[in-house]
Length: 95
Image 1 (cartoon, rainbow, N blue to C red):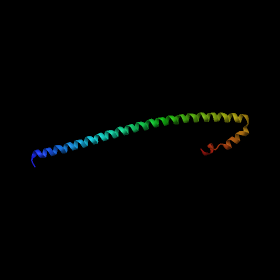
Image 2: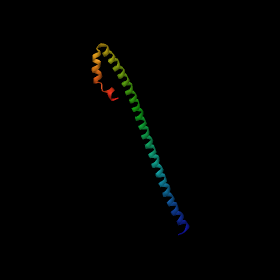
Image 3: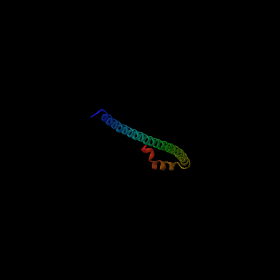
């Protein structure tokens, strides 16, 4: 085997290695882009869910305030009815 044949073989082998490296780099770049897009989508979803949770908390606070006002009105009208309401209310017993 002479030197020129050895250099041609080495050149072909180096070309194959370079092609494999380029393909691997392209695959990793593509994967990174897909993962980045997925992370951004998950962040948007989390932000949306956090907003929904804040809205639910605000609604619950308004409902609790209204409930307290209604209980106050009920006790001022007929205190015996409050006992019935408290017996039916299981949320305070579970908490």
